[in-house]
Image 1 (cartoon, rainbow, N blue to C red):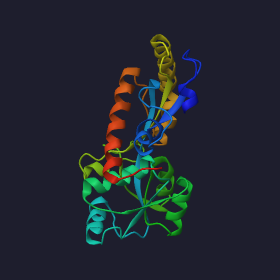
Image 2: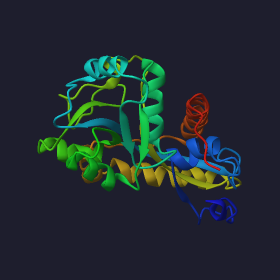
Image 3: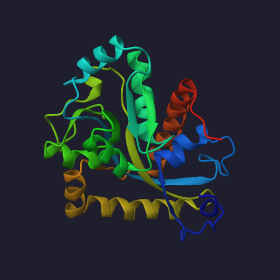
Image 4: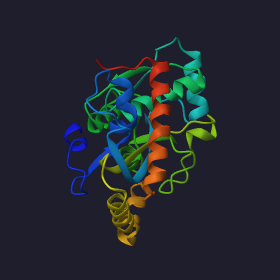
Length: 248
């Protein structure tokens, strides 16, 4: 990420940033070698997708209210949730869920989403937060169950699955990707990059394929994307601080 920030600001170098690199990492890594707000010129937010709270098929809670009741009836840290790693958007989704519901689960980090779904399928793990696109195919086959998605509203690809926010007001945790250029890239160059990216996202075939996967194309303006990144940085920084999440 640092070499991209130091690249010539001529529009020939852009980088793909995520919620991790440009919102979460600055709060959990004490010696991160770049400033996510100062060193980059936001070009456009490409897409968002919800995460999902998934459980094994034999898990006793059938919905979010039952899960919360179960957690409140157990000793603290009696149940664990798995994610694809420490400091990921799904890790902080679990932390936010606990903060808003007054419940607690032990966090079990795996090395990637594939290990998480394998653990759910094998019975090694009962609860997981993961990207929706990773668990939805398994849920459709009846191999796991999704109790809720982490967007404010229901996912277009799975309208029968409730949003966690329907039970837990204010809960939202979206994975997102966006394009960034070096900070001193001229505004006309940034605007042209945004227009080209937005046009590609609007292509019918691209938009349709994204929606089949539960991904929402965005194509925001540079100004909108900058405001979004600033808000996400503060929001997830607050969640990480309350949860005491840090990586030395």
